[in-house]
Image: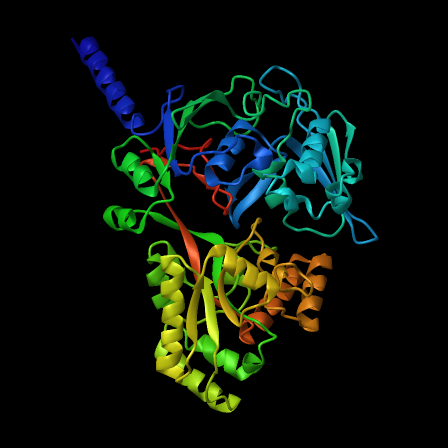
Length: 527
């Protein structure tokens, strides 16, 4: 009898342990994950990836030299296709990277991944005839400009052997590994399979088909790298609207949703807000004589209620700007640039800011503005924001500025032709780095619409580009941002947030900070 009692007790204990383990993911257990994103893909070609959904597909189908993972100081780049690398500072200010590829890395048709396929991919990306919106990701590589003009061999990316890749950078670039070598656009490319993009891949997931707006990805049997320890199957639902994506999540069809509406956020209440690399900015045309007064420009900036503007734009998806560089953009030395460096616009005491603004206005000697307009796009949000800004200047400073809405084409023509006095524009970046938000104000830059010119600003960006110290680079970029904003030449208004939600009980989501997410490490939380 005692023997049977012991057996029953052991069976009960085993059942209890199995039940506890069932709260997490079982070893060998099949796990399917589903995501909902907004926007149908125009292409599954990594070089042409321009939307969140297109980049998500590329990051799972292909493996790049490096991959992002969460570390102690935020997201960091670690080896993926490259099992190791060396970096050399050259006497002429250039950098050389040598990557050693994992010799066991395979394509889905069984062929070995070769360094020459990365060379080809980067030459293809830089080639102007490719028409890639991501080509500028390689602008730090020596020979980039010549490659853009039609000489692909000028790009200094070399296959020294089948598994050794050498890259020469024309300037020091602390974000090269973290941004360029992890991007969807720079993954290897097979020159012998120009029409098999997406279907012959080297990443943790293989092509499972695309039908009725749903992409199916299956765990790749050929893959032996560090990625891909998560779901056996990933389905990505490409939705026409944010409402459709939110409904899929609410119905339990999707485990992850990104790009939702303010209304959906209010209903659910458990969303994560992630800063986007996007800031809405008021720019001043430096050729406008009435605005050629620093104290006046400072007063105009201080009188703006940025919290009100963020609410007008949609308070769940926008936040009052604290600087030109939005929160979430990485600093060279680690962490976030917004918390480690730069100015801090205080949006907590608008009345106090208005009092300071009135003092500065008095110091400026300006009592009125004649026929000054604030240009904006003719969408509802842009018009509401411009009207609120002008109304605030009237109420708090007694200055009359008229909002003027234009079609996007008219606004673009006014900006490029310098035919405006002030304008509201949106600044974005193609990489997770503060320099991307500042360089458009350099003298001679094609997007320096306000014709801003400052020898000190230009010098700070040049020193930052040449600096071998991450801390010194961050300090120069910080000083450049402060100079630009504190003089009122660029007036940050509000920043855009990306709102997403991962179903409760799941963990392991990785983001590049620009809107692309990886699900290959997603799993059920233990316990």
